[in-house]
Length: 133
Image (cartoon, rainbow, N blue to C red):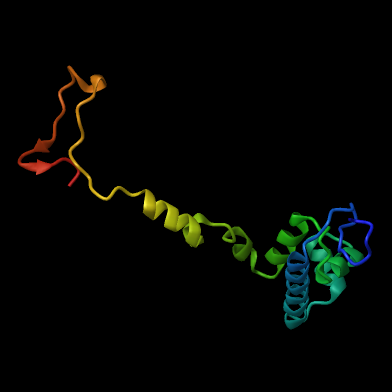
């Protein structure tokens, strides 16, 4: 499958899904645009993130074999590292939030005493108010 010239692969021979390829190409183009908008030459930007111009060219071209550290350093140099840090944040993930919401019980009742709490004095109220409120 990887021998087919129409199927994109990394330098290591790993197959890249076409949608992933398009996304990486757009990301590379966006990084290139952001660098140029900041009036940074390719060499200055490459030096700043600690890579060669050839590697920068691969990054800006959307090469799927570029390391995540290279991507992170490029985003950091552009002041956009926060976008990468928050990319999989559960608080921003609709599926995770829906699952957490579904896990919340419909009703909450008084907790039953367990064997672990027998013999231990449990204080529910202090001066007529609940503890912690």
